[in-house]
Length: 324
Image 1 (cartoon, rainbow, N blue to C red):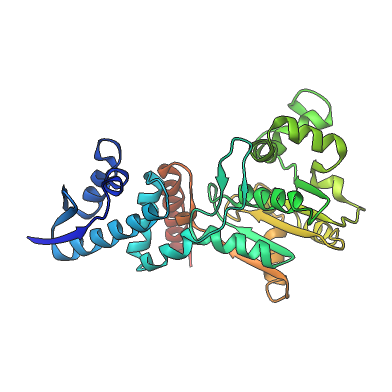
Image 2 (image 1 turned 180 degrees about the vertical axis):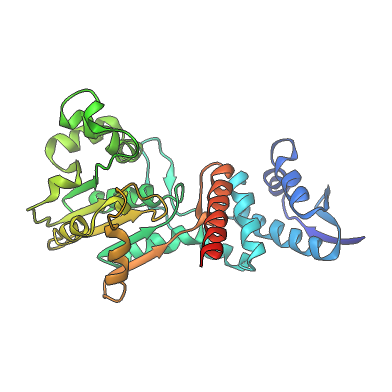
């Protein structure tokens, strides 16, 4: 039985680290098969030497977050564990240096929660066109909207335009009630939700009435030139190559575009190519265009979402190996 001791400066650190009813420490003990106890200003970790070493690195990483004012939760634990596993726990300090992007209507700061998200935000800041590719729950759309709101508030752009293709995912548009706008609105709901969160419902509606914010299906973009705008194309995996080219060539002066999508969730009819998959191949070497790939480690939703994504990836990999 190996034992290692970690010195603690303040009792508040212990309270945050252990969590309510020691839930955080229980998760670490289960992950590394060790015993973790607190004795005054010390935390003792006992178990197999290799497991103790990993648990100590995880605790030290969590303490770095705590010392920067972060509250430890289930996502923090899972993310730090994944960094320790990949030998990247020393990069935690880089993450917590991230600036706040903007403040939501409820006063909550929005900033990257993973290293992948930080790369994504920095790419949006430094490039004219950014492709954010990754699975559900990685914050692709939400962070893009946050960056758009920041640019709008700082008067870097005059308007925000959010769009996505209205592609049926197992349901028929014709069976939905209402006129065309009502039929399309459910496809745009995630974009509305993000804007409501950032701006508040009243401010959003005022900006929309003035024409400062536009949320519309991709078909409405044809024939336009978008100057002084921050444009977000969401669910871009469901564009055709022609639609993607049409969208990218709408870009005007002093504008920025973010294209988000998940190439594992294509709802196009069989035989149709995804414009997103084609675009990231064609445009990968062009200056001022960045392609950022997020993965299951960047998922900030419920832990099951991360596990579901990983299970599907493993299944697809097994299928490829079997059929190659």
